[in-house]
Structure formats: C-alpha cells, structure tokens
Length: 123
Image 1 (cartoon, rainbow, N blue to C red):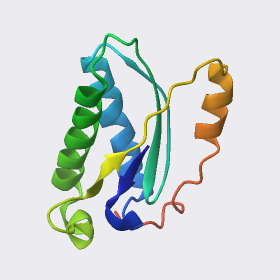
Image 2 (image 1 turned 135 degrees about the vertical axis):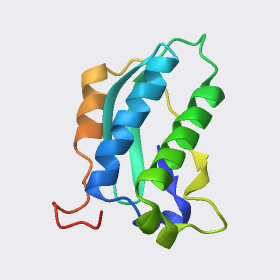
Image 3 (image 1 turned 180 degrees about the horizontal axis):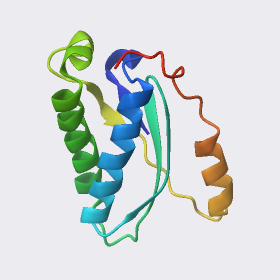
C-alpha cells in the first residue's frame, strides 16, 4: 500500500488509470505480474506476484518513483497543487505477504476499495 503525502486526496480517476498502467509496466520490467490494483484518492493497493528472489525495496522504489514521475509529467497542474516539499507520496509503504490465505481472498479485498468519483474528477 502506498499513501499520498499527508493522506491528501490527490489522485483522480484518470490518474489512477494511468498509474495502474505504469505500475503494471514496472512489475513486468522486474519479471513480475501486477495481479490486482485498486485505490482511493489518497492511497493505492497492489497485489503483486513475486518470488522471494526479488529485492522488495528495489521493486517498491521503482513503483513509487516511476509512477510519481509519470504523474508529474502527465498531470502537472493537478500534481503541483498537492506537492509538499517536492514529494507527492509519503516515504512510507506497507507490504504484507499472503501466507496461507488464498489469493482470491486478497484479490477480493483489493477490488473492494473505493475509487475516486466518476468522470467529473479533476484531470
């Protein structure tokens, strides 16, 4: 889970669609698959399939860094309103492993997350 800086509701529906595409590409670059993506206007949930041979911090840094860079490039006016100290997202993140839980249970949780309002959201 990634959180926007100070949990500000900075992410619009259009931004999240683009963010999902970018994050899927980053996962593919690491030879991994983005199994589920869902988000609210102030945080993002990902379900990524990866073996323990992947350096988790490198994957997380790429996911956060590349997505923030792309969002800044493609939605500059909107992102600028939410930048605090030059950072779009919080430095923290949460990672958990599924353990014995079926993947379908975790996927259902990620799918159930609220998304920002319809097409009337700012671009």
